Image 1 (cartoon, helix red, strand yellow):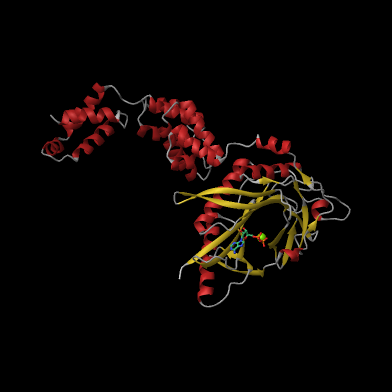
Image 2 (cartoon, rainbow, N blue to C red; image 1 turned 90 degrees about the vertical axis):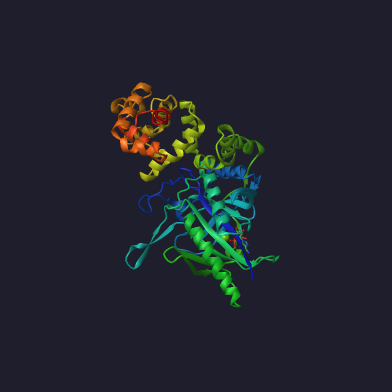
Length: 477
Ligand code: ADP
Ligand code: MG
């Protein structure tokens, strides 16, 4: 019997506001514990929350970007539960009337596009953090994170495989980072994912019972956790058992999920509208003003890179992976006037390769866009060959200066003077009579040997096209 997986993701994205969602305390990551929590974040009596307008604006931006309905009126509610990192005893969230509802995001899997529904995205505050490893035999509580603004983005159960789930998560990650509403840092917990998974017999109309695996904090872990959970549930069902609806935890070291707690139902939370906060009203003008500030979104940029620059879908998707990288590429093309494909090869192959090796990204590139453009100009105008350009690039990356300075200092200008190339060819032929005889006797493969020798004799500087052409003529005798 075949099984089908059904997956829905809940993603918490931390909004890039400077202060918290209901207080003026700062949101910066990594401060000394409990230095960034004020009376409101601590839930002390006698203080009142005030909504941060920037958080709402970011939620609306996100909603517009996923083509969702922006609530003209949304309401904050209290979600009650007890945990030491939640001093108020409730989390302020949105329940019945979320800020954003009914959007969608398109993903690409195996060359096909699939539309994934987004049920809702609501604003809420984050809780604090329990520090289990900081003190022997004790747990510390750090409330710096309490009150940090989040949007919780809930997908429809439209995903059918771990690969689709990861594609969706990556597309969502890319989108919130493009919008500038989230820094996307998964290690620091700025973008976290809970995975809801169930399985059913292929063709069944009803969904199976689901489990929710909490806080899987990398793309790879999400894929692994879901794959494990699918296998586990299939085994349970095939051996005649039943899947228990529960919250599970992923353990990266074993690649397995395990029971954390049985799942609460919504009514256990005793949700009710927070009487300390007014309903949030968004006018059409407010929404339209935000719409005008939206940047070009990843999918549109990708399509434009394909049509405007004639790039392959692969190149376009790599170059638009990050807005900063896309900008970099466009500056290189504009400043160099180079072939768009040549520029793409240099940015994707050489630059990204070097950055990756150096453990940094485009924002930390030692070679600026204009500098790379300077190098491409020298390839385009035949000052240097593509091969020598690699050497120049390495020197640029190592901080030795711009392309022209390096070409001059190292004497790398390409030899295009055909007399000089012919002289080198004649020397090589004279020095290798055996190979010459073999070549003329039909050993065609030796042509490459002669090219190599000529390039060596000219220290790689001879124009490769001229070498090939002139060598062929000379060897023919
Ligand atoms: P809760 O608030 O208890 O987490 P929701 O109804 O908000 O429950 O659903 C949470 C997530 O679970 C959503 O992403 C939804 O798509 C997903 N989901 C719901 N039912 C199933 C199911 N049977 N299998 C897999 N995912 C599901
Ligand atoms: Mg949930």
